Amino acid sequence: MPARTHTRSTTPPSDGIEVRLPWWAVALPALAFAALLLLIVGPGEARAATGDPALGRLLAHIMALLSR
Figure (tube, rainbow, N blue to C red):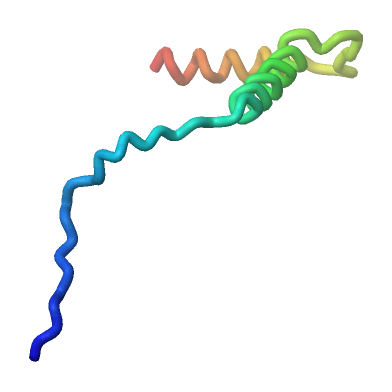
């Protein structure tokens, strides 16, 4: 007597399952991004010893690449 085989359907189940994130899963990355952005934008009293600032060189390099 042959055993029954189960066939898989290719359509996903429509049970109305919702994926919900906790509040901290959105707040913590946003807070970390804002803190890093503030560190880049306002370096405070730190001054470079010699040469031009690294951020200016980076922006100049990006502009040079985009203008090609």
